[in-house]
Length: 116
Image (cartoon, rainbow, N blue to C red):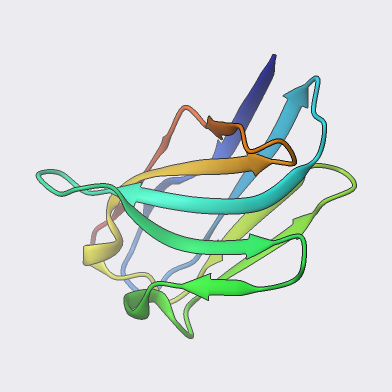
């Protein structure tokens, strides 16, 4: 079985920075797509950032220029660096993966709260 283990998150003031990390453990065949989603209270889960093994990147418009996704496909780890955080970034963040045989996995979620 594969598990995604998240770390990071917490409380930060507006304008501050946080880093989220995710590691795939267990019988990992290889991760093709590494992603971060978030879900704010009363809202649907949305894709925040994604990177593929081929090198393609995606960011939702609201985080462009502020967030950066990085990853190591050999180590099955990836991170989300979040800068210039705003109150509207407050949400539970989930790491997500699609492996080489198209199985999907989710992390347990970590709360990010941006508040003065």
